[in-house]
Image 1 (tube, helix red, strand yellow):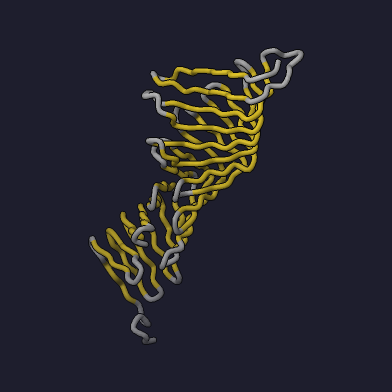
Image 2 (tube, rainbow, N blue to C red):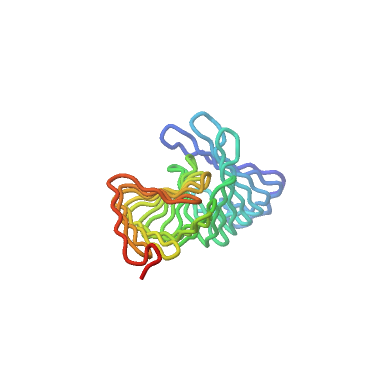
Length: 263
């Protein structure tokens, strides 16, 4: 069968509608499997409960199997909020069935002015509006975060890393940070659990870290302990800025010989 062909699959999800819509300029003949279609120039759209487009997918070619897993090739994705693009993605192939999709091969994700990453595979759940991937390094403003597990909420533009993370902050005071888990949203990185910070000859431990690239300020809180070249500091909170370090909340400083240049 030739000519233009439109195939529409509507999936009802919690009162909302997700629409997988394929628009093909040409559809080659299919001799033995009438439920399977080869198409090119494919477009897919997803809608929220108000009927607004929340995501759009473009594919160079695709194989559509009615009621079964289908595969698209040469794929680009756009996730939107209030009509504006918030996240763009590309991959070699996208396979989907129901509300679950798999992005395979040279997967890239990039926020508009925010985080970006490259990985080989990711899972996308259109109902939960979440993308998951493993063993990734994401680039954020003024730094990067590596983690075994990664998830991204497409509706809130929030990236969550877990399983033990390592971050590099390359601001005015470069830091290497380790911790249990992290979140990145906009210009803010938040790291929680067993936080260790390394900068020059100094080491700090804390329960919680926040870094703002807007002010280039790192704030440690929760049982802060700092090991300095010639001393030690404990505090409830410690702020590492561009030109100074300040502490507050039950601050104790123990200085060793040599702090003032003596032996």
